[in-house]
Image (cartoon, rainbow, N blue to C red; front, side, top):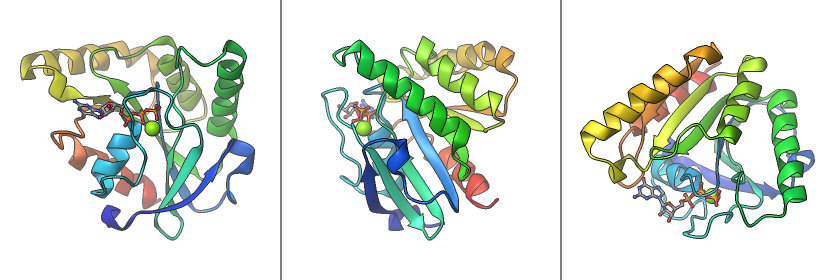
Length: 196
Ligand code: GTP
Ligand code: MG
């Protein structure tokens, strides 16, 4: 698959407005500001395919992109953003759970976590839901460029140990959109999921 050919398809205000549930979909999930949109841009070698921002909570719509026919990438709004009212947060958490549990075309989940603050409660909730429905997960420890290489390895090993109890199909990798680290591992997983 040529990820550089990825193009924007549509935005949906919530999961009930997603286009038809056919083909294969892979979603990018994570806390606000984790680097989801930046990862999509690095993957597709496009500077502003997905909107990025210093302000957390920038992605409020579900943005759908197509690599080619029947192969979609989904940029999900970030969770855990402090400034969002509690009721809105809860509603979005519920929607995310439903999306993971009901979306037939969803064949893989990328959970992005800042390498300096991995596995927060809501990240674990996402992993729980995905494992429960047998959805494979790629955990990307983002902004790895913020740590020295020794500390990067330490975090990677810590997360690998910490996810053992989840007993799902979970792969962990360090990732930096800035330094283009982990891109090959990301592409390899996507190719695997899209070829099913
Ligand atoms: P929401 O849409 O708000 O949920 O955020 P997001 O997860 O899409 O994060 P986004 O890609 O917008 O990045 C958030 C901030 O982190 C921006 O200021 C990015 O420039 C920065 N950032 C993203 N990836 C990296 C990275 O690999 N290294 C560094 N140093 N900064 C990064
Ligand atoms: Mg975003």
